[in-house]
Length: 175
Ligand SMILES: CC(C)(COP(=O)(O)OP(=O)(O)OC[C@H]1O[C@@H](n2cnc3c(N)ncnc32)[C@H](O)[C@@H]1OP(=O)(O)O)[C@@H](O)C(=O)NCCC(=O)NCCS
Image (tube, rainbow, N blue to C red; front, side, top):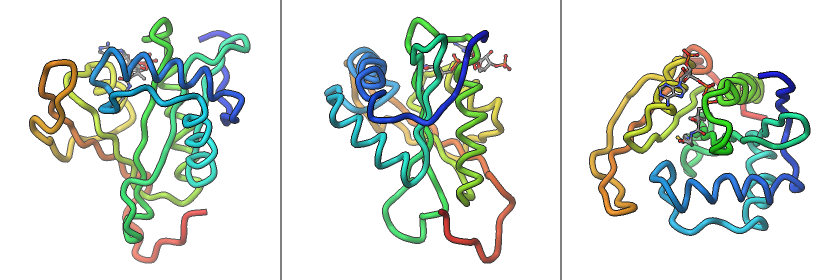
């Protein structure tokens, strides 16, 4: 997409990220949050995930059109080389390549920080998300059946996995 850039988010991006994400919280099962988080809360997530993993935004002509982030897959320490990734675009900007550009940058960043495996939990159905993850080599390694109830329906969640590096016998600490 012409004029598309990817950069690290700052807390100044919190309001627009909260507005984009809030749409998916209110109107879709793409996320299982039920109450849109405030801009302050999204700002806290940008700072926290940005410092431990990554929070990137896509920008077109100076306007933020979407974001992607990595965060811990799970809290317990042996999980620390595994991360969970997620991506949300302004609903007016779907299908234009921003998801691909964000994941290109995000997965490279996570690899550079020493993470070994990326996971995505994708509530079903979600053809666009399934296609984006497949494009980046994520494979379905599990399906949680009927694990979430939102907007009047039960939803399965596919667990998708992409190895960022081949298995390493003595992995260095993520930085
Ligand atoms: C998922 C999402 C980030 C994809 O971003 P995008 O910019 O629309 O995707 P891209 O244009 O980069 O396309 C990536 C691939 O997915 C395919 N794709 C995109 N939308 C699709 C759709 N609705 N159905 C099927 N395939 C689709 C594209 O054809 C492309 O594959 P190709 O390069 O082999 O042709 C975006 O649709 C989105 O924000 N969806 C709503 C939020 C969401 O569900 N997030 C995921 C939470 S797990």
